Figure 1 (tube, rainbow, N blue to C red):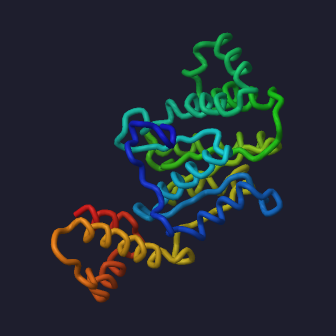
Figure 2 (figure 1 turned 60 degrees about the horizontal axis):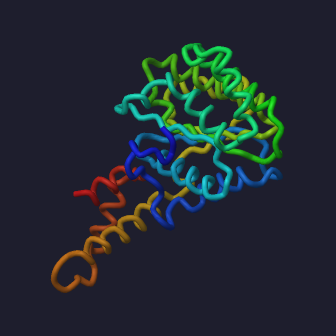
Length: 268
């Protein structure tokens, strides 16, 4: 699904004034060719660490700046988003809308072979994206494709490996445009193995959501803002400090860097 697809409702994104460092790092990689030596960023971390929120925030920022050309957010429990069956066709459609110069080339491919959507991922990628883009003439500037939740696509581990291989080959062939890829997933074994193989191994910068990006500070900011919001809707006089500093410290400690814990606390 697109980053702004209706079926995703109100998708998770970074709370204001959180994840500032990593968002700035990714945006600089996208917009500044002088510091960019790779064409893929792999953003990874455990469940609940905020990968999807970061990918969503980057997609929205790039959409506002005319840098986003396509996105796909996998979801394990969402029909149509829990397999790789529709991913290439969805990306190709968005690319043709974002880069009109490739649209005629894409339509020609589909007219010649209406069954192209039933072919392998690699065949679809070449026919629907790589060749139409290479054949088009347009201004050279960075364009971003976001694919998040790769660990959530099925039906098996081979699907992860196949998709990453196809995306890696595309990044290599489209590096002169350039098409950049932001890929988000958990660091599962088969995914780590795929990133250690060529061409992904030399095209990719890995960003791990660890203590380097100070998640505790961001979680404290999130808790502070959300508890203030909740208190503002409660009847009666406001408490000076709610929750107490001690309780806040306990909540941040229990979160252990996991934004999903913080969000769950606020929902209850």
